Length: 315
Image (cartoon, rainbow, N blue to C red; front, top):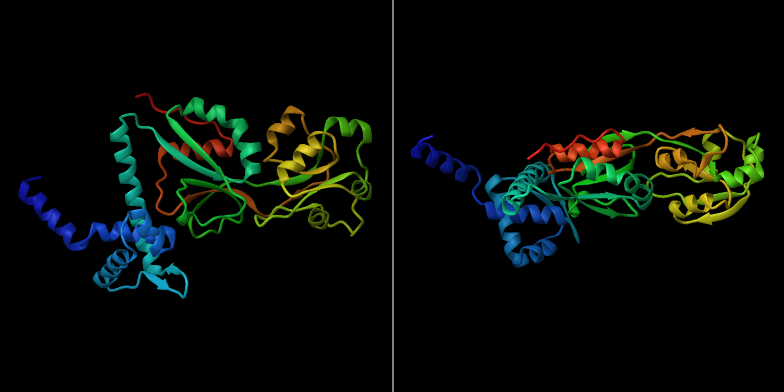
């Protein structure tokens, strides 16, 4: 390409993209859903950020934000622009990181619930690190489903129907829920032969969550059992505590089969009966809007799904 051709390309970019500064400040506002927080992050005044966004809106002749009483929300045009800008900035940041460190390593931020992290992620971490030694993983946990636009997250594991607007949902696996207990509890109490006997066993319950996880009452209704009194020996607010109580022989808990796969395979927990409920929702990994499906991200998705992790290419 000649010098004249390069100059024509640059002039074309400048005509179509009049201000990279305005795009950077727009991305920060969209990500935080706040002019104030974006201004603080960028080290400029809120008025300066507002001017840059107004400049973009006037240049494009579209409205990028719905300015509500105490909040802002992206318009359809704003969502379209944000998806492209965020992805482009992420790609540039990755290249800068690789060139600056000279190693090709980058921290990948994965967010899950505490239970998924404890029972599904941590037991399998060694396999991921062996296959992808250059991957630096930062694992964060959350109680509720957060809007991925407002957090520095590369991948999020969620349980639900997959219909989330803040990213692309990739199915990991479905789920089956059934009674579980410790081998010691089973030896002492035997297998319940009927649902009535199961309802009268020492049940360990956990609170239903916003994610759609169910308790014993919902489980009995889901399998079509008639209403019966349930014998609760223990109630826990966290599912991880429920599982640990069952592991220590305190009673019968609901086991999410894919979540507790390792503990069931090792014999720490056993399936108590054949009664089971296949739930409608599934586990998904969500790639936030603006993030790129790189080979390393694909490797993490395979690992989360339980598939063999492809080895990183040799340097």
